[in-house]
Length: 486
Image (cartoon, rainbow, N blue to C red; front, side, top):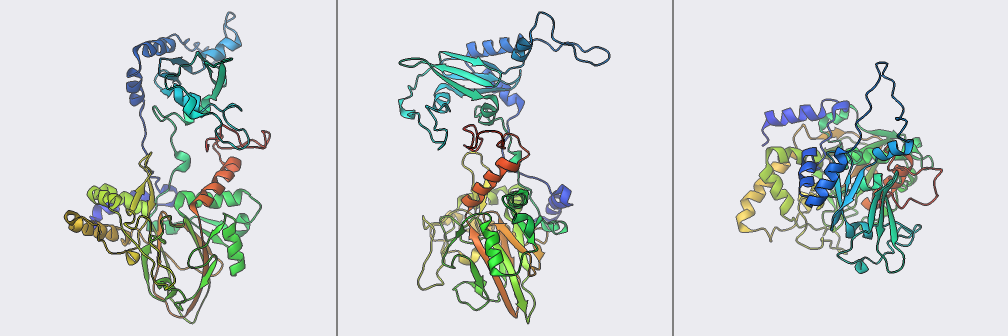
């Protein structure tokens, strides 16, 4: 069982109100001191050149007592003033260094810069596909010159005929800085929640979502991205309206249950979802190599009975608690693969590839961020590949995981009614239900994660408050080659 006092402390801090549902992204950051240390590791000549260039920057002109700004001195032109404010660029035999300020630097390898040239000869402006032959770039390539321009870095490369000139906008370089990474991921920040989300759950209106590619659809997808779920109110209680709602995001993914599905508790499919039994918190499709990304539910009717409350649990929130209180459990859940199967239909037998399955917690290999929770103890297959030395530890780990999932602080129960649909991120939010009686009609659909992410990215180019993500209506009709999504 969880240590209740520690858990309560975390819960209260994380979910005391809608405004304080705390964001706890699984991300890494680099401090300014790290940047300085990395700068010191540069080639000595580069370090001295960069440091001296930074030191030679003009000091700000002292302000007059009335706090008005002085114009540039007579001997200093406007162009010279702008040049003083540009990032500093220099190079050694391997890398180009860009100094954003006296303590923040980025380093870009020559081969990386040449490979990422976005001129029309190297990158197709319409298809957004690479044209430069990466494998013909000499491994010891060095620029002829690098120069800081007002809008970006200009690099001149040697060529058999005339020198090749590449240009890289400053915002693009900062966004794609890898040595060290500079850009934070606030726009992708996840809002973790527990049971108190019931005080103000994310909700949009059906008519907002159904307007042509408008901000209402963007708000809906943003809620799904940040919270992992969202309600839609005012949905006509028909399969047709619900299917159209699903298709606002993308293609409906067809599975062994059909494309758009409608079901009751008649066991027409070999799955306990088609019964009146209670279902514990789980994610769907653990038996698929690529589980469906989103799942939409809509209760059409419930007659002659009661029960059937819907359960939602934020898997990322629970994982954060496990990681903090039981790091050894978190490690096991992140390493040990769990096999699964769907075998209730005689005509189908689903298992993931590889058949040994995947860990409960999957992480981004580049950032270490938690990316997916896949857990359904009912669909778990025989743990025949579990090492003998890990058997007891693994069972203790899933017992702790189950205890966290079923904690009252983690469970959000809601009674769905006709006219209100709910959509969940199946890679993050676990769902379940209480037992019920009577006749209950549900409908819904699966949507791929790639379709969801594509639609969200396209809408972000229109409506995001982040100017680096937006595409100006006055600009060219095609997507910019400098889009941060490319």
